[in-house]
Length: 182
Image (cartoon, rainbow, N blue to C red; front, top):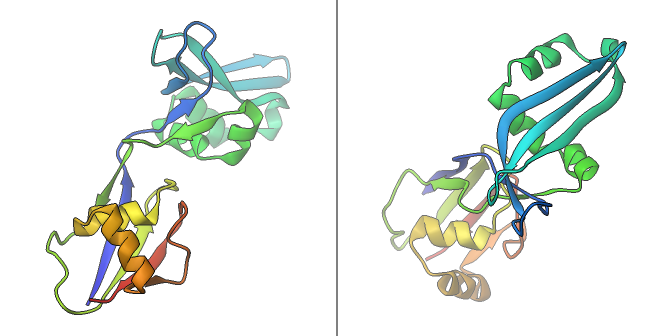
């Protein structure tokens, strides 16, 4: 028997960065952009709001770039405050490094399994697809998907009843497949 599971984002992740106004370390992307042009050069930022005090920070997308080097469709999306562009840019490792941020995906995704029933006495092959690169522990996905405790999943791994071509003990954000033998 085979099943398909999908990890689906439910909202944008929170940005982890220290707030200068309060003790909070979480920011919510506002979905708004600020674009500033100075002669032939352009700057663009993504605005984020502190979850504690509401202070606004600017996440640099590009600085002092020639206007001609920016694709017109990207410029239009920036001016239109495109929420899809916000999601794309928050998943870009270059934006993370440039702004020294990390993302907090807690509570920002759900697992769609399709079938809520418990596995019977046969082997089940499950293919997990990620709709967005959400870093989650496969052990948590398996526990949530089948209604097991994490200790039960760890026991299944130890006894060899749960096998996969990828390591199931760390975090993954890409598609993988596993087999549960019962």
